[in-house]
Amino acid sequence: MQRFPQPPECLPAPVGLEDRVKCLWQLWEGPEGRLPVVPDGCQDLVVCRQDRSARAILAGVDHATTWAPVDRDLSYIGIRFQPGVDLEPLGFRAQDLVGERVELPLARATSLGRWLRSALAAEEPFPLLCEGLEARLRPPSEGTREALECAAGQDWPFISHRTLQRHVFKATGVPPSVWQQLRRVRLAACKLLSESSVSLATLALEAGYADQAHMTREFRRRFGLTPGRLRREADYYRSIFLTPGAF
Image (tube, rainbow, N blue to C red):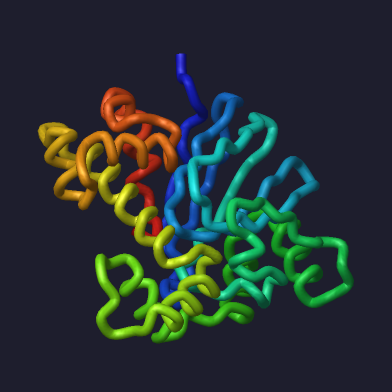
């Protein structure tokens, strides 16, 4: 028996939106349950639909795995944004969305509300959603991209800590130290899932942890499971961790 709902199917970013959209995803049918959503450093626009009703939700950067309820009577589609894309044109700052799921106001008599209502009422919402996002969202600035790349590394030689803090927090809602931790633990998990022969002790050292126990604590903190359990349940979790994200 399937323990969890099947993970969403990922689709390439639309042509012309690759600098703002990481990928599209869809979950049409499957068993009910709770789907693990592991932290990937990205923000998503999620649409839940049932017959003629629909909801649009913005999901922020997560510090740790969350569990999304899946209803067999609903269909789910999503747009995963590139890290650093400013979502203020949609009404929210990155720091307001960290760890949150915020419903967008469809009923408002604004251009945002009219666009969302029109897109969500369409038989195929993706084209209208992407058209509206292309008109509203700008790609991350060069300064933001450089700051995120710098924060993901081990040191910051070409940028002051204050400037780095400002850029990363505005772009993601989390400080550079958390961004670096998320990158390290996610890359370690992806390597564990893609290289079955690597030992956990070796993986911990290669990932920059003090030892295997340190890595295990971070896995528990961010994913709610140990490296050993992730390896045992690799057939299910592989498709979740290897989907496009910030890292």
